[in-house]
Length: 280
Figure 1 (tube, rainbow, N blue to C red):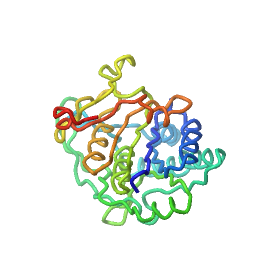
Figure 2 (cartoon, rainbow, N blue to C red):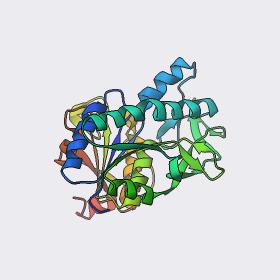
Figure 3 (cartoon, rainbow, N blue to C red):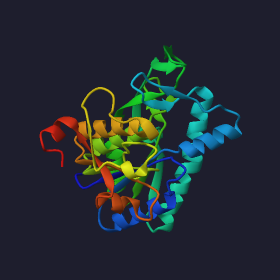
Figure 4 (cartoon, one colour):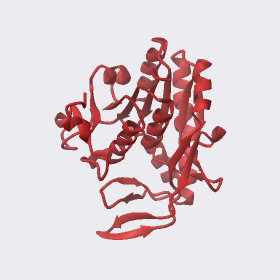
């Protein structure tokens, strides 16, 4: 589905999901198939706080940070995404005149993952191995299910958790889920919306936004501050999977998707392509 657009709506509290959905509806009415993948970090944190669960993160040796998901936190993740964030997006798309279907990775085996048995992390300056984190890396996407919904005129609204090989749910990063979905569909573009105007050379300075960000095929991403580490890893995976273009853009404006497609974004390219002059 070469003209398919996959958009990841970030869970950053500053991202306006209503504006994202109104803009997506305009893109859909323009004739493009659209899949919306979402996280919900602000909703997860708020629910976890109500349940008395501490918000903890794991930082890998390469500086990339991810949510630490013990069993109780996994339940909070599932509740927040499926019960709060997803219904909000589905309602907003419906209000904008576009029918939507909400799915977690468990529905129809949409997202399948390999459970991580251990995580290398840096805790208090020391490298350690964490073995009780319920997360995984996506290995398969049921693209046929999404294609049938798109053909029927629906916008699929997709989120973690995913289904592990042992038949139990695992958390997975929503940016990387979006990358896997985009690659499985052969999408033309993947737009990762966040609470910043793009990739920033200095996370404290929004004026330092990059027009283009080359990412190496292996090793740590060039920027990890401001939550960009996993986004750049996801972008690299999408490009390696054949996605035509990957953009990191501001989700706080009135037309964030169309703005990104028009150039108001950081385009992520493979470093080898950028060096060879074929990045844009």
